[in-house]
Each structure stands twice: as C-alpha cells, then as structure tokens.
Image (cartoon, rainbow, N blue to C red; front, side, top):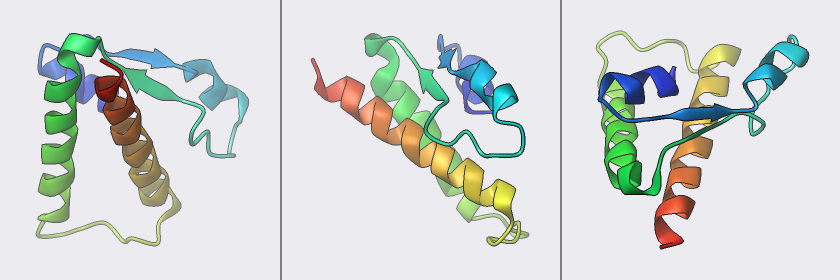
Length: 91
C-alpha cells in the first residue's frame, strides 16, 4: 500500500521482506517488511506518508481503530516513517 502510494507520486520505492508477508500467514509481518526509497527522495517520501496519515485521520468515516488490519497498517506506516527518517539523517 505505501509502496504503491509512493510510486504514484513518481518515487522509486523498493520493498524488502515482501515474501515474509506470505510466509508468516496470519501472523502480522510488522517490522519485517520495509519500504525504502533512494536517499534523494527520502524527504519527499516522508512528506507523502505524513500527508497520507493526516488525510486518513481527517476522514468523515474512520475505520474502527480496534480492527487488527488497521492496527497493522498503522504500525507499518510508523515503521516506514521511522526508517525514512533514519535514512534521511544518515547523510
């Protein structure tokens, strides 16, 4: 989902650990799957993810927060945001 969002904005995302999602079955692969972008795109990617999070939180009909999928997506976005931040500060 996040990689698709970034690709739609002409960024070059790479997904690491994608196959782990299949291998874990019903167990969430949180923290095992990462979406990376080239260093030169990290600031823009962070802004896109941040704007996406803001747009989701302002929805008129939010999904139930207790739903496991929503929790998994939120954790994934949090992990991605942290990874992008870590990459951008390595310069």
